[in-house]
Length: 422
Image (tube, rainbow, N blue to C red; front, top):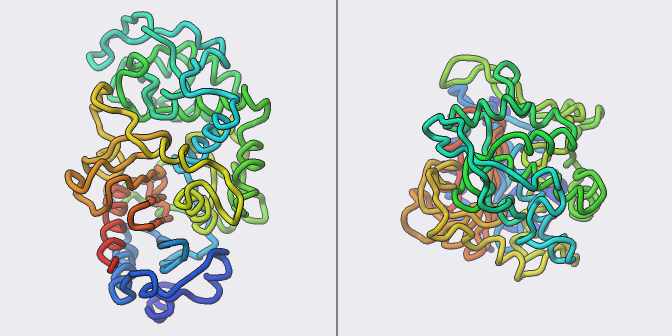
C-alpha cells in the first residue's frame, strides 16, 4: 500500500483529487489563488511518509482550508473516510453546545453547577494535594459553568494528576481503577455525578487551570438543562445540521471497518499501547470530554463554522460576539497555571485558555508559528486542529498516535502549514 501511495502524483495531492473534493463537501481552490504555495505544500507528504516508513505512526490525514476553501488534502497511509477517536476534540463541540444554550438563556456562565446538580452543593478540597495530604477543607465557593468551560473547576484527570492523594480519592470514589484505568466513562450519568460529589477537588474552584474531567461534568449539566442525553442534543443541534455524516458516540456496524487504529507497539516504549476507546458500543454515559468518533471531513465543517464566526451554509449556530468570548483569555493573572495549556498540548508556552480552546496570546513565546488569537485543541488519540482567524486558516491533523510523540506531530504539522503561506 505504501508503494502505491508514493507513486501518487504530488501535484494531484496538492490540488486534490475529484474524489476527495466530493467527500469534503466544501469549496476547494488552488493554493496559489488563496495565498499559499503549492510547491511548499509538497513538503508535507514526505515528512509524514518518513514517519510511517520508520514505523513511528500508522498514517495521517492532513487538511488545510484558507478563506473558506480547502487548499490541501492528503491521505497518507490511511483512507480519507477513516473514522477516528476524537477523544478531547469532543470538548470544543460540547463547549459550543453549552454556549448555544447560554445564548438561549437556558443557563449562565456564572451559574453554580449545584443549581442543576444539587449533589455538588457542598464540596471539599484537598488542603495540600501536591504534598500527598488527604486532609480537606470546604470549597470557598461552588464550581460554576464558567469553571467547567475553562478548566478551573478544581477537578483533574485521575490518569494524569501529579497528586497521589487526588488519584487515590478518584479511585475511592469509583472514577478510576489502577487495573482498568478510566471508570468515569463507564458510569451512568447519575453514578458519575454521585462519584464527583464524593471525591474532593484538587484545587479551590477558580484558582488554578488544571486540564480535567470538567467537560464531562459539563455534559451532565447540559443534560439536566436540556432534559435529553448529551449525544441526542449534539446530534440535533450540531452534528446533523452541520452535515457531519460520520460523527457519533457509537460507530454503527456498517462503518466499523473504517475505524483507524494505532500501531500495535508504542515506538517510544516498545510496549503495546493501552487499549483505546471501543467505538462500537455504548459507554456508561455520553462523554462530553472524550467520547465522539469523527472523520476529517466532518470535523473540518465544524471548524469552518467557527472560523466563519458561527455560521455555515447560511445557518447560524453562535453569534460572532459569543465566538469572540470563547476565544478570549479566561485565565488572566489571577488563575495559576502550573502547566500551561500550550505546554500540555504541544510542549510550548505562549497560550492561555478560553471556553473550550487554548488561545495564542501573541507572536512570541510559543516555539511554533501562528497568530495572536489563533485557537486550538487536540485529542489523546492523536487528532489536532487549529483555527487562525487572522490568516483565515484551518489546519487539521487526523491520526491515531496515542503516545507522547503526538506533541511532536502537532508542532510538525503547524510549522509545515505556516511555511507555505505566501
